[in-house]
Image (cartoon, rainbow, N blue to C red; front, side):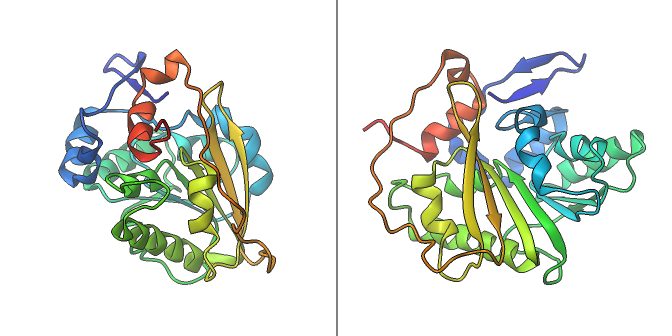
Length: 256
C-alpha cells in the first residue's frame, strides 16, 4: 500500500482520486505535488532493497524515471550509489525534489524535468534505468489488459525503446510494477529489444513484481510464445485500502 506523510511528518495511508483517469492529467500531478510531501508507490525501498543490491555497484550511473516525491533516490544514495539522475514530467515535482535534496546536502543527485517518452539523453549513457510504478500511468484507460488499445501499446513501446537506447550495451532496466508477467512479457520481449527478462516478487499477500531486463543478454528463444492463462489474485485487507490497489484495479482487471 502506498504511504504519504502529513505536515507533521506522521505516516499515513491515502486513497487517490475517484477515477484513475485523473492520473492522465498533468494538472492533477502538479496540484498533488504542491501539497503532498512524500508518497511511495509499490512499497518503499526497504521492501525490495535485497533485490536491487546485486544489480548495482558504487560506480553505476542510474536514471530514475518518474521520481515524483519518492525517497528512492535518497535511499540509493545512502547505500553508496551517488551517480543518480531523476526525471519527472511535473515541474512542481522537480522543483520540490531539487529543494529537498539540496536541503539535505545531496547536491550530486541531478533532477530534471523531462518526458519518459522522449528521453533527452544520448545513446548508451546509463548503466541502470529504474522506474517504480511509473509505467503504470501508461496503462490507464488501456482497455482489456490481455489486448490493450493500440494507443497504449504505442506509448509503452516508445518508453521501452527510449530506455533501451540510453542503456549501455550491458545495462540493466529495473521495472517495479503492479503488472503481472502475463501482461508485461509480450511488451518487454518485443523483437527489437536485446535484453533478457527475469522477475521476482515482493510484498505480503499482495505481490509486486521486480523485473530485471539485462541488455545484450537475450537468447534467441527468449520469447513469450507459451499459452498465457488468466491468473487469479488474492488481496489482503490492508492492500484494499491503499491507492496502489485503486490504481491496479483499473490496470489489471482480472476478476471476470
